[in-house]
Image (cartoon, rainbow, N blue to C red; front, side, top):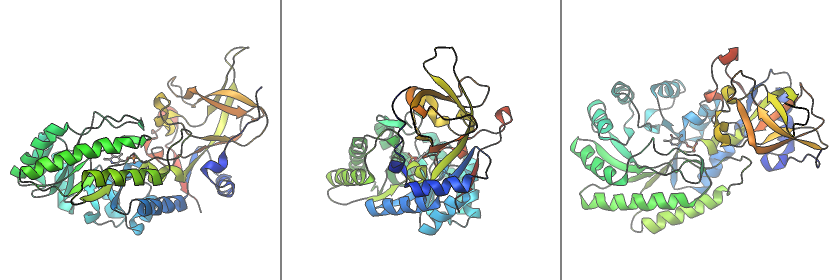
Length: 390
Ligand SMILES: *Cc1c(COP(=O)(O)O)cnc(C)c1O
């Protein structure tokens, strides 16, 4: 037995809001995800206020829920679209293609043609082969070139797979121009849940170098797409958005002294992470040996139900048990018959000792990269259900 269980609920949301979500979920089967659209609205407004020079292209993949997309449509957001399926969804919801970019560098030529046919004229790229596809399937379109970043300092790095070396980017720019495309800008992603603001500085000085080189070679680039990476509130501390915005603006001013390019940002996690609360039931609480120092706590959701970002314990979700009293050190795991379905073994989590099997636990900040990651009928478990808080 240890000290009193303490969970800083109010650091994540007002208690009143938690109570509302809890009441709303009372008669719903677990696991389920409750989405509070008011939080998405205030995150959108917070980003607008802090980065007024950045045009928002919401990264749909973070949370493609129709209600979330419709709200952002009404608030005036544009959208970073990764597949023709996301494109079809946005069209169904009445988003016009002038508010979309095809941001995925990995795409089939016939999908590029599909986007072009629907009216999309803004494409990301990072290879000669992909530039050639775009030149054939989407002639004269604007293209932006994604540069490689290291993903250092990010809890969920997006490095290596995306982007190309800055030196190669220079050749790509000329190649795109020669193929009749409009070399429009440079993009990067510093890694998701990026807690080191300095990573934007490194990326922006590389971008500025490419801008200057291109101008010397007769190509005037106009846009910087700074991607995502802005944080949501998990247990590891992050700076407030004001600090990100202030530092990034000064990096921009340092690197672009004469003329500020058009700026795009593609928030995903920071827009929707905080809006979700995952309601889960405790399936079992057990020890593995008489003197086991840890209690294993099995929830009715795990890696396959939507919490895949706990891989390597990368994303550390705040988990709230309602009881008070002394605590137990726990290992948290999911309900499936796969031994990799363990959420947290190394990261210390604790639970009030009086918690009983069958009670509920609440996983906070689960509005991004959860429902869309949940598997389909592994062990027969249905995909994660989401409800919009009424
Ligand atoms: C996933 C993704 C984003 C969103 O990143 P977050 O860190 O969730 O904000 C933005 N841009 C691109 C190209 C992406 O693939």
